[in-house]
Image 1 (cartoon, rainbow, N blue to C red):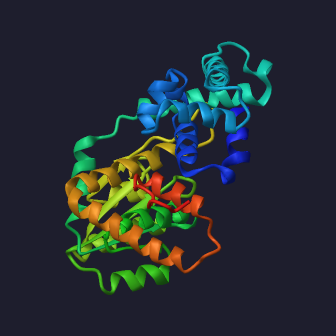
Image 2: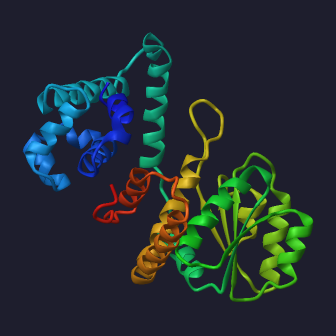
Length: 301
């Protein structure tokens, strides 16, 4: 399979070949419909490079590689749109059905865009941002805090338990924003009490919940409700993460220049750190830079 061949040969590829490899792995569906010339144009190399890349990873040329990519796409589509008994395909067939259900949940997510915009503006104008969750959601709160820090927003995750809540409340101010994340796996009473106390001290409050009837949803200034029910009967968290992604992108749009500068500064700091660690191969750094749409330095091979 082309993916395995690319991964097995990746360390030995030249910078141009690695650029092609990254593009093929990250845009497989598009590549299936591209000729060698069109692919070369998309990546910024000449068509001969596409042919040599195909040969480098074990194919006779791009035509053979393209044929295998098309087969892969057709197989994936057949699984995704297979109706009837998914068990005939074993676990892969069952996962295909789950993938369809996930796509439908995301597509049918009726997020209140006005509330998302209000929440984004509150966060954007805050002096300090606190993201609170009880134990089951603290990992997501920490992850989102990291993303907000990338935009140079003063953000801190806290666990919604007595002592951390007290430490937050003793200094809470009207220009602070408290955001809570509720997965709905527990009643989240502690989170609800924290929101209520924060509001009484003048802080702005935003609740992101999987049920509008949970206590946090009833206590916040703004409640972003994301349904979590799935056909299996077990609650999911995918729509909640989708709302966090929308908020993050809205914050970028509110001050795009500042966000770009913050990310540039982050990459500069990362470069400075990596330069002190000579054991990190250049191709790993190049792949990361391309992920952030930053051009690797010439000669970094």
